[in-house]
Image (cartoon, rainbow, N blue to C red; front, side, top):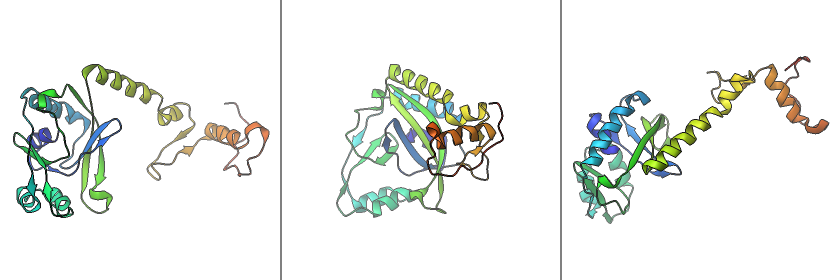
Length: 214
């Protein structure tokens, strides 16, 4: 995916791309990108997969690595933080990255990959350091990928933000993006939870609406 990004977006700068529980992500210093751009990126990924580009691993000194990545500011910063010793970059065609292995013999071994979402991030989580586009991906075989996408679509239907808005329980606003603003119906449920079984929890209710039908 990183190699595809560099082909599609001239001037993009790579940072890190670790594996996570349900796939992986890559923070990339690049121009604006949205889910509308995913088909173009995925088409380039498929081209790279079909090219069966081999992965070549080699060991270099820290000084050599700094020379190789002289035009990659984020890679340089990470390499400079390493202790002296050997570094093991991996080459795949024109792509050259310091990665942990082992790796597949070539890109053709990748059976299925899907770009899932894009989000923003700050370099090393420090504001106001440069912000990036974080691209999240999942990699499976084709059968597992189909099942995973179906699972995500079902989870979206059950998202509390969507259900809460549909039931007129709460809404979200720019004043506090992560905090629900409870409506009258939502406060009925809130207060019922605070007084479960008719017993007070000792916590004061935020607001009690007038009796009304839900």
